[in-house]
Length: 266
Image (cartoon, rainbow, N blue to C red; front, side, top):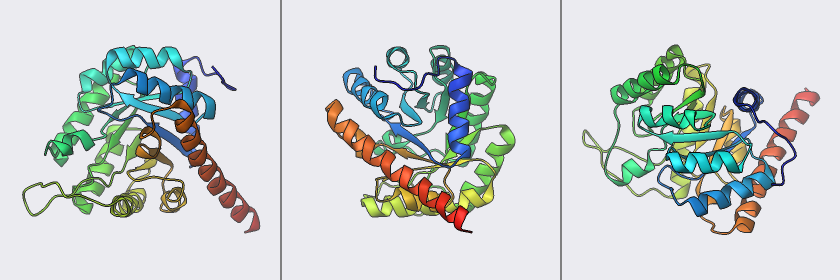
């Protein structure tokens, strides 16, 4: 394992995540909530061990969580919409639980409401009891006002981070799936990020359609972190994943250096 830093204790890994979010340069690599292919996920983990993003995000499948925890010292996010499974993942070594990554639900025509997300978030916080950090994805199909209200309520609840998305829409009163282009996904998630960053003090992570070309825009809208999925997990080999992660991390570093230079110049 080609690691240059070790965070063997949960508290240290969680502190790393919080530090990266505070510095507004965190990068999370997403395997996918529906991706339980252990061979593929462990290939992604090996690429992450080589490149050292802030964290990796995997499905809350117990056998997968155990395998990934054995394979890396990097902070591990786990994602699903079942609080009990998130709590079990913490017992198996997850550092951050995330209620979200709803793309698989949207593909089935399922859309969570404000009340459903808030209720699931309350249950998650209660079950976790401070043993791990908690992140909640704000459904992108909710109205802007509803998203802002939910973000404020999640902050009061004690959630640590929120994540935006741009992968779904609703039409009229009945949720319907609409095919979105990559540029549409990015624009929606950037708009959501900007509004939520202004509405709450919670760190906001931007996800959906993030690439090396869109990272700067994500951070410019107020994001503290980006979640990168398809750009990396579309690949099958460790080497291809490593190349994609390197491109993402280099783009994030350029953004950080540009911000630092601008601060010094002012």
